Image (cartoon, rainbow, N blue to C red; front, side, top):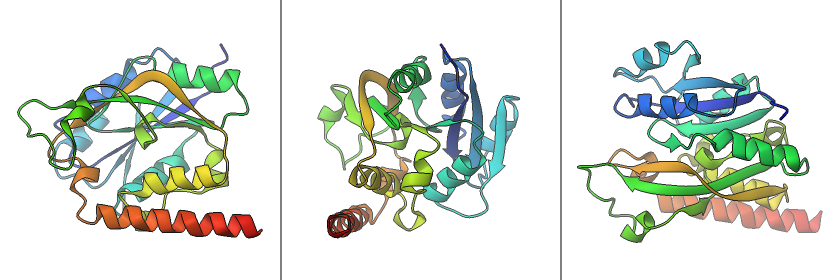
Length: 229
């Protein structure tokens, strides 16, 4: 199989508790050609020491704040023609890259792919009140950054993530890609294990519902503009 370089962007802030496990899940990939970029949101714990202990990692310190800016820095620094993303507290299956890259190589019209995700509750942590327990029962197809593998050129077409919408910036990005009709695929495989704990950024955002409403408003306006063009 032709093996184009994939850039794996990992964003983290004060993630020393789970960070090493996430890195190891990338290093366990059965796909041979990848680089790892870590964007650190000015951590004050041992995150930087963990990242610097791995010679495979290109390490960057974020000078601003927010998940969108962190992702955008990683995208800008990526050397690969394909880009994937992993949060410091989640885990990939060993075939995450090979499954998605193989699919894109077989289907050159597809610009990005997502996959199924299985949630798991970190032991000794309470179940998040904002979720239903049934989320733990089966894998779900999710359009989130951690399941995404995209051709780098897609970010020129769709644009980068919007810092004004963090932490709903990924919802907005996928909505923009959908509204533009960018060809994509949802793989049936479960390629991500997403950890639930009391520090999940998306679950703890105080204005999360308002941000989603803004994303939907923008999508409606965008569709109207595209229809009138």
